[in-house]
Figure 1 (spheres, rainbow, N blue to C red):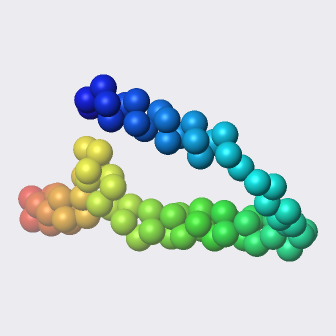
Figure 2: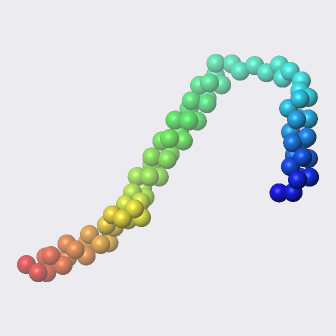
Length: 80
């Protein structure tokens, strides 16, 4: 980054941080409940997606995929 860009960014940042007005905002108890529900819903969604793609995740990190396991079981049953 050029020196002038850094100086301009710093001045704009100080301008926006230095000049402020009170927000007079109010957060009622329902807002905290909504944020908690969003957080728990996101965690639950991530767990569902992780569960759906578990075989791909294991294969990505070096585990055997379902396709490899079915080939091994077929090869071992043919050998017997």
